[in-house]
Amino acid sequence: MGQTPPNGPEVTEPEWSNYDIETVVGDLKLPWGLAFLPDGSMLITERSGELIHFKNGEKTMIKGVPEVRAKGQGGLLDITLHPDYSSNGWIYMSYSSEEGPGDGAHTAISRAKLQGNQLTNLEVLYKATPNTEAGQHYGSRIVFDKDGYMFYSIGERGNHQENPQDITRDGGKVYRLKDDGSIPEDNPFVNDAAAKKAIYSYGHRNPQGMILHPETGEIWVHEHGPRGGDEINVVKKGANYGWPEISYGINYNGTILTEDTAKPGMEQPLYYWVPSIAPSGFALVTGDRYPAWKGDLLVGSLSFAYLEKLTLEGGEVTKREKVIDGMGRVRNVVQGPDGYIYAGIEGKGIVKIVPKI
Figure 1 (cartoon, rainbow, N blue to C red):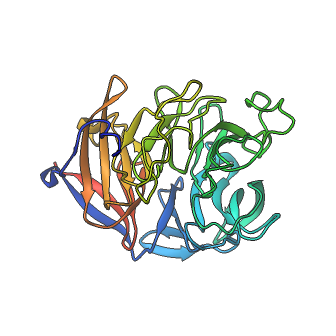
Figure 2: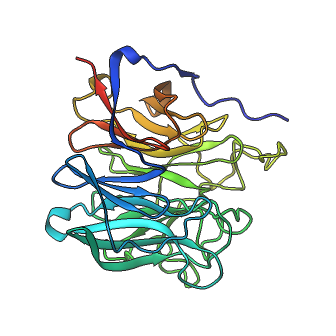
Figure 3: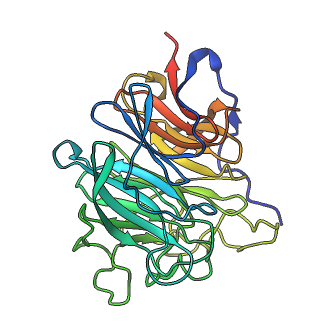
């Protein structure tokens, strides 16, 4: 039995005549996260554990960064600012942490403030447990919704048999907290005594892309499938996204993971990729810098080293295009406050897409 046929159009080659790619920050190894400060400067995470402040063409290493376990897919991962950063100064980070029970590490979410070149007031808001020596599937992106709640993802840490479908266990989930780390009273599992009460949805594999949809206010994620079956999902309160009970992929060795692509009570993806592109980083194009792209999705591909643009019409993907190709594995993509699209490319740095006039 082969894999499920591709869900939608084939990806087309980039039209380089329409734009230039400019390197903004060079000499980065693995730029996982990117956030823009109000003055237009950048905070960039290197997965190895460094936090870089890039301003006026210069890189400054920030001190006081949480200790990370930079092993496998772990390290210093996402970074984002509080929606009211200009008034409260909070910066949020996700990373692999050895704190807590068990050997190894698991995903942690912290917040801190930046004073000069030093992080201060560091607070751990959530630490998944128990630790594991597994090196994969930490997640993890952080996004605030329009009501100021913080959503973040934690991958199933390679334990698909137990974690994703069990709400008493961490991993394979999207979580929701208040900005101070407390549990919202209306989270879906707050009245389940055994549940991890921060969980908002479950049955995920390894979401490494997350956006707030600017029009609907929904949280969207994309996540790695096994061999085939990467997915885009619209996150719903208390919903089960099926992993590993349903999947459009197969095992890495070619054997069948599950015969089912749908089951009652389990959500279907908005879109899925076969073969896998290994998605990381997620953005939706707004504003007038790229008028022909407005409303399109941008997704980095680790497997094929390109940035993919997906056109949505009526909730369906009708066109797929490569926007950046052949520069390296695209780890992250962000639309900056200046309206330009920035991508983090492994082994290169941060590049900007500049439309040709």
